[in-house]
Amino acid sequence: MTKPSAIVIGSGFGGLAAAIRLSCKGYHVQVLEKLNAPGGRASVHKQDGFTFDAGPTIITAPYLLEELWTLCGRTFSHDITLKAMEPFYRIRFDDGTWFDYSGNDKTMRAEIARFASDDLAGYDRFMVEANLAHKLGFEDLGGVTFDTIWDLLAAVPNMVRMRAWRSIYALVAKHIQNPKLRMVFSFHPLLIGGNPFSVTSVYSLINTLERRFGVHWAMGGTGALIKGLVNLLEERGAHVRCDAPVTRILIENGRAVGVELENGEQLKSDIVVSNADTAWTYKNLVDKKYRNHWTDRKIANGKYSMSLFVWYFGTKKQYHDVPHHMIMLGPRYRELLTDIFKRHKLADDFSLYLHRPSASDPSVAPAGCDAFYVLAPVPHLGSGTDWSKQAEPFRQSIQDLLEKTVMPGLGAEVISQKLMTPQDFKDRLWSYQGAAFGLEPLLLQSAWFRPHNRSEDVPGLYMVGAGTHPGAGVPGVLMSAKALEKVIPDVTHHS
Image (tube, rainbow, N blue to C red; front, side, top):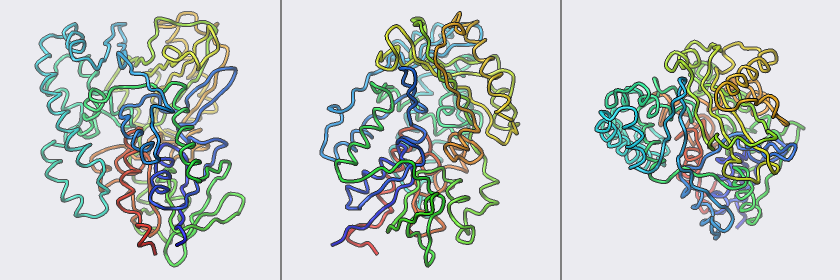
């Protein structure tokens, strides 16, 4: 019997995981990547002896990766070394104080007591709710495909038990009174493109996910994981073809039957799986005459995540006082997020995520040097910002702040650098509006309301990645590939 064929558009974590699962189910798989190397948002920049991971920097649910190695008859730990972070992050406030966020309960309680011992009981209550959200929202619903309205109705009792209509900030504020601690326990949705004052409190599950499975660094960088996934595919005879941008999904008799590349080449397949941005996929790859659900108007009316400004840089000295992961909160919290998510305004102030992988992994920088990236959440391109003019002044402002706070003399030490702006998200990654995480994970843009894993418009077309269910973040996109298994045709029943 001839194997049915599958084309996967995009080689990010979601695309590679989907390709592996499809291959293990009996499909002949080809992965098409627009860039010159695998990875998508998780690609790697190598320059001047430094290794800069373009996107994800932490692994929080290693078992989802281990499953893929097991499916291929391999042992994850033989190929990849994960290093547990302790503390997970340092959260630095604008006044120079900081909170070390840890996986150790005793350490966490001591840190909370340093700020407000009266909030210890509230922290316990918050974690009870976070644990419930992890059970009901991640374990029970994360792998559900939400393919039909009945899937949504079946999930309603869980959503009610979690009181999912609350924002995560509202949930935190219910239990914790100290303003700084409220920031500590509500910032997590920013890691997946959500405003803590708007996204559903279900995302408190991230607190439990980290506590239960830890926060890890993949030695060699996130790119080592991408390389490992590609190797698994190649061992199975599947191929990742780079420099192959898809510009059209071929549809015959209303069904997806392959793709057309930028060079005009057409490739046929039995099914097509898109790991590309979902809004971009529908708007630019699927002819509008086939889109009764994801119309141009519906796409335009969606509320999209923020974008990111990222400055990758290497220094000729080491900053030993800077931990591997540091979140630097600016003078405003709610107001800055309002500027980013609601006003779509590029503000003069910012909050930062400062990443120093060489603190844990000397392989990412030349001897005696440090590798960094610093990331600022910024509005998507709906702000109208001209990044060709704003990028360097914005970068300089970030450098000035770092010099005044945690990295004195930084400007004189930088020997390699690279920038990524919202315009790059649009032009390089083909992300709608330059949004870094697709649709914002609001309650009415989650689960059944998010683009489905099985296309609502085109039979034979499927979605994985940040823009579909369950959402952004490495665990989310890996689970989207797992959910895909429930809706793709079985090989023995393929038509």
